[in-house]
Length: 85
Image (cartoon, rainbow, N blue to C red; front, side, top):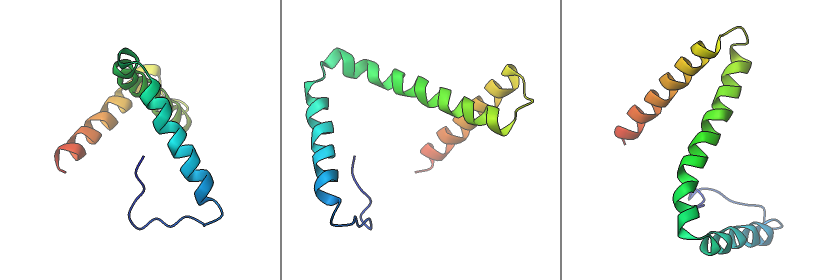
């Protein structure tokens, strides 16, 4: 995962961060292609479940239907933002 250009890490933590990043890269390289293909939908499902949990916290009295509608609205906003880049 690339870091923003203006990001500066405390030099004490840099070796640890580099080691963690390297391990992530090596793990990704070991992942079979068929697993990598499935990672996208899995990550999307996970992100949706986290967003739904946040919506439930934000709107505790909302029904499941209302929460799913709010999730769809947020996904549409994200899609529009992505298209404007």
